[in-house]
Image (cartoon, rainbow, N blue to C red):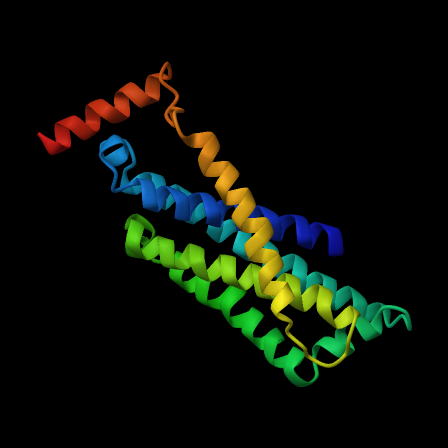
Length: 193
């Protein structure tokens, strides 16, 4: 379940990033007539599905380790339930599952770019904390947050974001020869006109 959980978390982070990115583009003149509330609702529904799937696999992983009661696997959760790591575990339960779950159940939140972007940011921050919670206790049982952890995120993430945005410059984001694009533009022009 460890690999499956990590893979699903990566998919959830990808949907959250795409959703946040589209909320920033939704207000631009080029995308104003194309991106509609139904698109954000669909992305919100996908994020909701991945939030539930992540919680299911995370709990299944915990349950399998607890039930198997293997001496090799038990320290994985023993370290992560005590002290600051235990507080981070509660943070992950609340901000990686419960808060996004209940927020994404509301259609009003999913339809508006401003509110769904908040949910996307919550998920991305929770993913970062979750990966730190997953890796750091393997090196030290006591909580220690180094500035290098944040610096590596800013360096690698910043470089990736710079290259990503650089690749988008001069490119069309909308597939021009698709029939649904013409329909979306036509519907947007009718609603705005």
